[in-house]
Image (cartoon, rainbow, N blue to C red; front, side, top):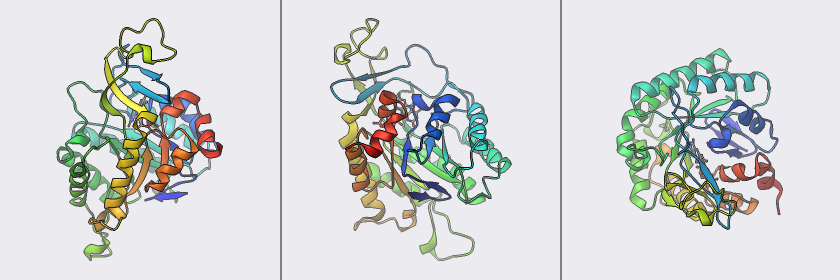
Length: 333
Ligand SMILES: Cc1cc2nc3c(=O)[nH]c(=O)nc-3n(C[C@H](O)[C@H](O)[C@H](O)COP(=O)(O)O)c2cc1C
């Protein structure tokens, strides 16, 4: 069990945002699993994302890995809000739903957060303890043409983070996280935390700087590793329709076992910088880490916890096994 600001994740296991958490049926099935302590929607935009046959995923190789060229969900945020309301109104459980969203403009993001907050108020989530709705801003989809993942140029995220910070200041029950790209050198981590530290908020009741907290309550590490390539012959069940390369876009986001060491390293480094002996961001100590990337066995889940994750999530294993994935991560030897 882990508490992340106003939400409780128990057990500390959930799906990370993906093509297999796209529609009401997917989400209801994930929510009904006794092995998930929270669920995450696929990333929604304000108006929906135009999908075509170039957007796809292949499960491949000798291990549990995947390569995908998906962008964001074709379903707009408004549709997810209807589904989230339906799921929560049918249940008394404390299990939260993380609504994954993205926007390239501050105005677009504010409008999305406002409609999520309107839903939270309408269903009493702002006064409920624990809350059951959280937000994850996806800063790290590698598959959007002409729009590099903003998480790789963290300073450019400041206008969007400012919006999130203002929304958190107005309602501290709002639990907000960031979906992070996989980083490969140390300054990427410290640059991100330096930007987050500038947003720290002082509770009204207390004016000592030591009590300031981050409006960002969690980091989900990591998204897929962009610009990766598999040949069709590397996909065991390759349909004949595939050309030389496994993806129509040739390159896409790599996930599953193939990125596990990198994701572990990302969780470890953030954890050390936030609360290890070398921690130097006291106002960020409230940030929790959701470890994602190659969690395909109970041992991999334990490794994530061992390097500092407060909760663990998976996508590729969900694509391979369906919701049974969470039972595998909970009970397999
Ligand atoms: C087919 C597919 C679609 C995905 N779609 C999203 C998405 O919409 N939003 C997001 O934040 N991450 C998305 N991801 C990334 C996953 O949430 C996760 O970060 C990544 O796959 C690593 O975890 P895994 O090894 O358990 O798959 C997607 C991953 C896959 C495989």
